[in-house]
Image (tube, rainbow, N blue to C red; front, side):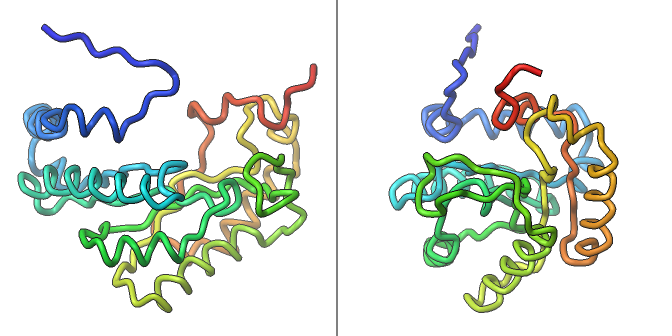
Length: 219
């Protein structure tokens, strides 16, 4: 038996490249456990997040994504596999360059995924500088329409767009989460953006919401 253990700085791409058989075994397990008719309706997102915004890490992501994509599609042709979880208002990134590089590499995803948390960088050129709550109430609308425009202008044939994660804060203990402002934020964004993407994942219970990014001070 082999025990798999990892630390908090777990590198998924490196792990898959070191253990390429694990994805094929995962696909076989899912088919056995849930059945083909069920799994064929699923969406699989392979997150790139902070790994795809430099030239070499992007190529690593593209190669690993192709492996994941082919493993799923070979056994489950109807399943949808996408990524990479662009975070335009959290990570500084040139999404146009990344999308063009992906187009040139081939094996484009079935859908593009994005993570939208309503922050803006004080210095857009520096990832190290802190983010603050955006004063742009239409930030989510602006980012989604910008992504649609990029895909069109770059002639990338992907029509399906998923906002896999979105929220006003990445911290579950932010006081804004218990305010009327939060409810208004949800309604405003859904009424304004509901027809611009195919999936919205309003994130309320995930690991990222347990961060202390904007609530480090004592309550």
